[in-house]
Image (cartoon, rainbow, N blue to C red; front, side):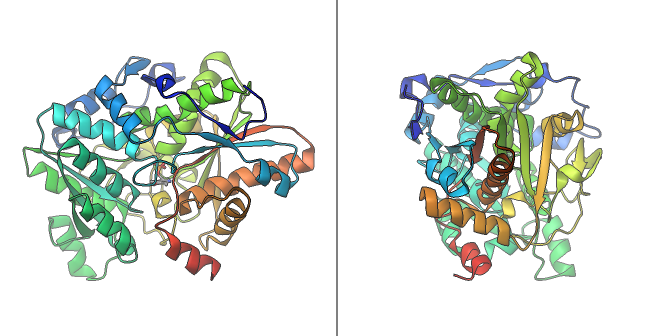
Length: 427
Ligand SMILES: *Cc1c(COP(=O)(O)O)cnc(C)c1O
């Protein structure tokens, strides 16, 4: 293939047929969860629970699920951002994976939503319950449940639910039941609303509510869109595709960048390359872009709960504290107190660098606008963080003269997030 291709894609039949499980390759075993696993274990899909602690390096993607991946547009392209390179006057080569493109709901979240819906139906379940922050996960789950033949219930962080009317309608079009969280539906929600009827909510609170709901129904499972090992596993299809795509143009990334909330899209693009760093000693730099509202990779490395009420087992993580108040940001998908156990271990071992951008979000939205002006695509607010960090890396190359190959993930499109752009950029 020509080396200066603007778009690099795989043939449909070359889509990866297995996910990569990094757990056996980690430099030390993951610290085990602490406390009572019963509630979480009972509420989860069995196959996903098995995958959570699987010792196998590779896990086959069931043929029927591969079919569905093709139905929703996989494989997805890697683009070379040539115009952006020129604008930045950088000797670096910039490549990005477009996860928002061809995604029916606009982000990478559909990759794991479909996998979880597939396993839930196989187990005979009828309803999936979840939380959502920015709304991308709730939409992806609503879509996956619908096309798999299941019902969906979504607890949506109230601060975001308020301003994303269109996205709520989108979920409801898929047939999902959507509640602003805290809600009157659960004990956790009622307790918080009593203290503050206009409580803005948080992901941790919405997780508590969803778990409470799912545990009260035998035919329901509680599903998560990030943080957990099996979610990152499903997302490795992103990085596995990228690897083949970069190989096709004879490139290997010196730097891999993405935004990190709970870690699913970062893990998705980075883990296959991190596996090389662990096994073959490759020297790729991995950079996680975060918001100062929730710089969880700079938190303390200790045991903490994944949810607000403490129903979930305690995981060893970098955490800001599970009842931490975090200022609202438009990149709400990044506003979570903890990060995936796999990534936190790798961060602790020095494999992952991090940068956190100010909560006024001017810099990241300006970066998104530069990207839009040069490459034409409107990124999701979360993806704007990834773009800002990639631009910063390209700027460093301009100063040092290094010709690095930078690969970044654009985790979603921003077609439904115009309000964020309007508010932050005053357009
Ligand atoms: C949810 C979301 C994120 C953040 O979640 P991760 O699990 O850290 O990837 C980032 N980008 C988009 C578009 C999202 O929907």
